[in-house]
Image 1 (tube, rainbow, N blue to C red):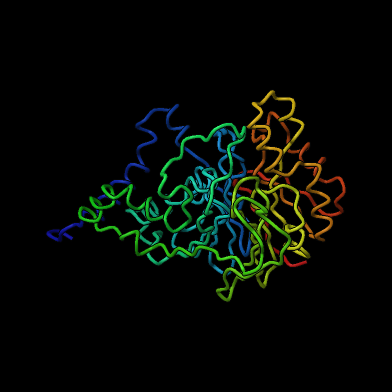
Image 2 (cartoon, helix red, strand yellow):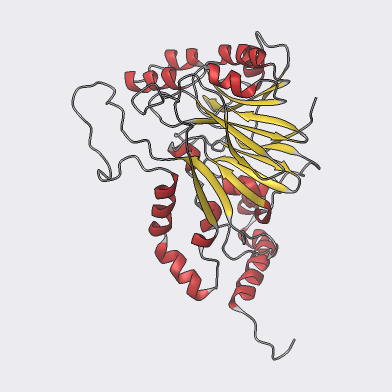
Length: 373
């Protein structure tokens, strides 16, 4: 209306909308084509969305970093937040306003690269005023490891970053992220009235049950029974320790809903704890590695040792799924991630040996309906 003041927030949102509407044509054909990133049409009902399927840390242009979303009863639960997770979340047609919780299997960089971006960017100005994080999001993940593993060659100690807190858990990680972006946040708080990110994140460091015998220097994943992490009435989440080489703690998660159950292995070698957690599940999302590819690649000894002691070979995942009695095996956290190195058909064929169910070689933005068998 004439004479009515326009807020800076509305002005910026309107400017963004105008840029999206007319910017592609103004940039020219080549740039416009690059800017026209396709979105997917979201399925109706409960579903699993593979936001990114690449193992890391090295960036792979053809796949985004490991991240998944589970949509149940109008709520979205994100499992791991790899590179470009926030962008993929939007391309999948998911609303930030529906984000209920985030679960982090472990604190390797390729699983948390986009974690804080959900709050740093997802609570900022938006062209859609109804698609902002405005309510606290529960974040579940590992506490402090408590000790660093020995160096690979055991010959001298490498330098220690942040020697006073060399093994931070989820809580300190989040606090330091907030501090690191303080200038940007403080300016936007004053300039545009954004939400204070400290009011939007509720961190929960997962506590292990007593008597597991687990230790950061080993055993990192002794035999144990699953234990409850969260239950909001729509989704019950249980966890178990898995063996991801020197990383501790490293978790697998199970989500039980009225519509079916989904298990995420996290990063792990072949492990009986995954079988215990996944028993009778509808979907098992399991990491996968082609060990032969890395043996032939001429990797440095430390790199090859890490891969073989931290991940599950493609020939092993089918028998794991069969022992667990799951309906569908979904391959994700794929390494090598480059589809030119190993094709989807090859992943499916090799992973399916020893498994009587369905195998899905995960692709970025793939949607899988959640149905109880």
